[in-house]
Image: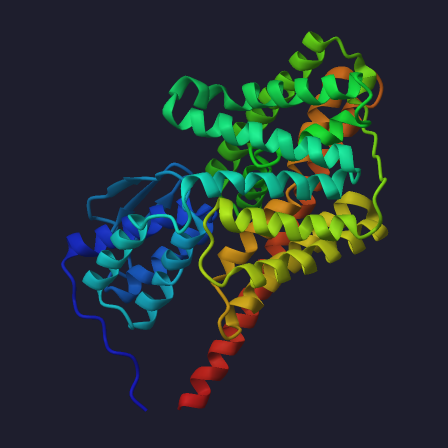
Length: 418
């Protein structure tokens, strides 16, 4: 049976341009640098440059078609929406498989990167409300707390929209958002409108917390990408400190004592509340990050199985065990969904589950307690680090298992065609 159409020889300039645009798009979509480098080397070999040199960083990409060739550089732009990521994710396999010609690939990449969002800006901003309420149903399942979290998410959405047009606020957004949300929640707690303010202020801020950045950095360090991993961890740690500064500043202005920032959980709603929270998170992410059409049921599926695995792991070994098992299941489930009929690319369903797993709130909790407590601050910080490491290890294991399954399926499919 005839194989795929061979790729036509392309000029060196076109090959390098494809690799630069594709790599920068994958980095903007949240891929780790070592995964992007592996994909680009495979694409380069398919395009006729088996000795291509690729060096990726979180903010830029260098590509040379050979050891003695000049290198090109491409800066990584803003984060991709999920609908863009769905389009971009198909290009590496299509180029390696020979189903897409070089010029077609470059034109398709440019079209995907310039594609307008599926939803208007106001609807994407409103998507933060169910995300905040959903995470509150998981962390602090009480009606006043959920309502306060939804209101705080609306405040964050407004601040994020203003920050797009005001560069100074964009730089100070972690501090400003944490200060405003924490002040509102602490004032409500002082007025006896709600209990457990610390866990209530975390859900609205979760969309801004650098938990995914920290876990990706740990994954890159484990894979040997030392520069990228260390830079992500440093940047993420600074972001956490800025959030903690905002929270502590709000507590000082409002006049709340250290007792207001104690990790207190209020569970007034039934055991169904966290599961409803997961569903709301899926809805919010679907609209906020403009997911591709038909992706929501698949996102729900991966979110729910990931959350179930996380809960099971917590029963065995607390938060680190939940992070480890949840990371394995999230990465593995995303791979399986991609192979099912009608399933979206794995990254589209993996990233929402990743954001649910990421201990951004635990990281902020540890940083805040480190600053205000006298006895257990170091233990809280170490616990947060342990959870980050556990999730990173789980993602690495799940990704390796997923690649192994995909390789076996591809070999079986190739054998059936012979």
